[in-house]
Length: 135
Ligand SMILES: [Ca+2]
Image 1 (tube, protein in one colour):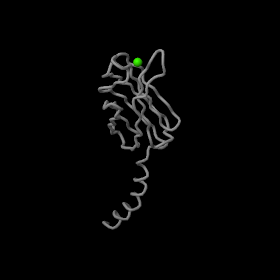
Image 2 (cartoon, protein in one colour):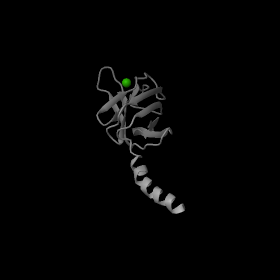
Image 3 (cartoon, protein in one colour):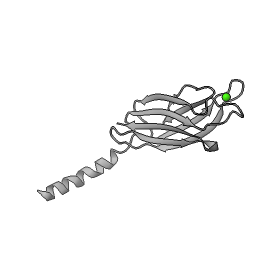
Image 4 (cartoon, helix red, strand yellow):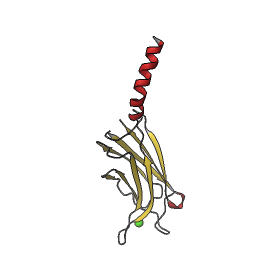
């Protein structure tokens, strides 16, 4: 009986390891907030966040005049085509090009219903916090 359990574990484990990939799965991303963001000289920045998985893009709204923005925006990716999530933090400008504050490449891990925390560091020591899960 014990041997049978052991043998069936050996058969299941390789599939379990493969199941940890997020490719082909639904990915939910919850962009929470930003901390100590800069990029607009002496004025408070107007930050927004872009999320990309494969060729699929999402974007938060721009929060004007706030170095500590709170987005609380949730995005849904139906079928992830990549195991990496690209997070870009931008600072909106009206009359010139938007300023790039930072990019993070986050490897995605499947974890059932568990939300995984990501802290994306920007230039000048700020950061953006988000959660994701793929199921
Ligand atoms: Ca601006």
